[in-house]
Length: 135
Image (cartoon, rainbow, N blue to C red):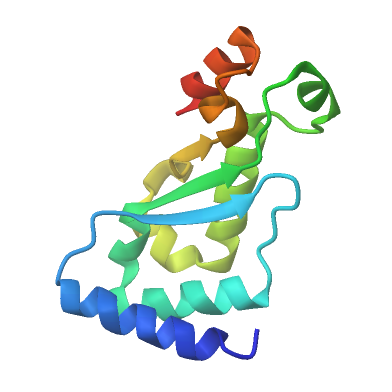
């Protein structure tokens, strides 16, 4: 956490040198998704550097979205609920910018990944198919 400001500054520097960014993928652990102060500050800094158009290029990715039956039963929320919830949370944190980028309360593109089932050749066929379908 102490190195976060330096890492963010280096990231912004590198992104500016690229001249164009197609997508900003925000990656969260689906088992413990957190939008803590560090992440909020990083997003604020990115918005300051790239303007409100940053939000036109944001996608959310949730890892550890396991597709086995037990994990599916344990989940308290569906992927659609999480998509709506996170889009709303970001809209609350950055209301002016996101309204410009996503009118009519649209949601951010969201992807849910079970990397274990997607790459494990021994995974159950239905579990593997469900994991790949999310991609």
